Image (cartoon, rainbow, N blue to C red; front, side):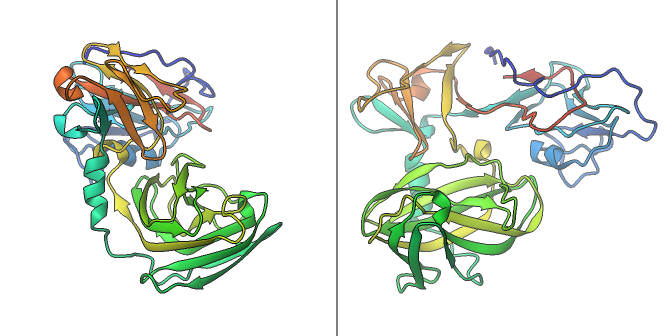
Length: 372
């Protein structure tokens, strides 16, 4: 691949780079695309395979995590902290080009795009629609729906008669804060490093904008259990529609809670129906081809870029390689004379997130990694 992008303030904000004596008990872990996450990871003959396995560690001060040269990974690396006694080092082993960490989703196949008319091509939705056409069997069916109101929120809930896990919310007062009406399911288990997909159907007597559910801790401080984009808004209309959301679990917990924050959004005197909820382990967004967050750039071939429409005010892309990201549909719309994958040799969709998430990490060293 011939394209490289600068990542100012990406890696070193909050990181402390140290030249410290490595503790004698320090371990070295190896990662290779030919490995397996069930391996011990402690030798080049038994390497781990995925970033998800690396992200859960656990590592001690002075430990080293080495990626095999010549290999590539897609996703996000979430480092763990070392200490003044020794940093945790993320580096490379073997011979050849530096290991590559890609913060993008590949859309280089013709099947990744479909024509929406007028030389407008969109990613993924046709394939996703096929998947959602046959919703999996509902899960979490043993858990009761629970409705909570506070502040100015006023609503009643009841099991509805439109599906095996359906629930109905009748709103009499919307409230002003999103927490004023909460519809939730709990508790259930999740495992750190794994990705989960939520699917559900919903409709309402009156269209409204709603936040997709948050995967969270059920007690104070009410923190998120996932790195999924927060506060993603969708429109729930008067016709049944299926919604999909991916969550990357950041912790292992037995008390996870899925919460629909409806306050200030569900209109007074409106009714909401939720049906056919499924929550199950899934492949990561990069492997599924999903675009779960804003795409900041399209990178073609040897480094040329698309032109993004930031404020499009109703007009779609009108020139070759001009594009926009549709947050609600989670797709790219791009103008192209012919399928974009036949117009370009490669198309990388750069997600607007850090390749390395430095949040809360310190005493970390990176060396010999190729970030793109």
